[in-house]
Image (cartoon, rainbow, N blue to C red):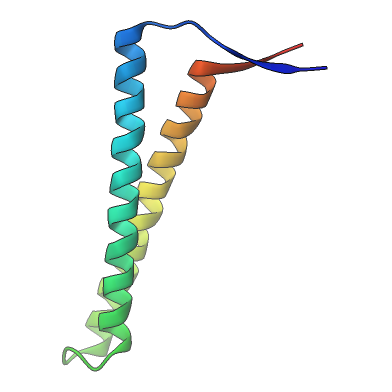
Length: 87
């Protein structure tokens, strides 16, 4: 049988890690919004070059993916820092 236990840690380090996680989350959400905006531009008649609009959309998707990966890594580090599974 396992239970989660909160690990003691350095308050300065823990504050930094929490702040970093929140920052990464906000960055990811901002990139999600950029993907939405880029998609609307690409799928509409706005702009003269559909290939350029599509390239901008793909770039936004790539940035969102990278932001999501960074957020996931930070959230995992936060989880591993504060919680452990003990048997």
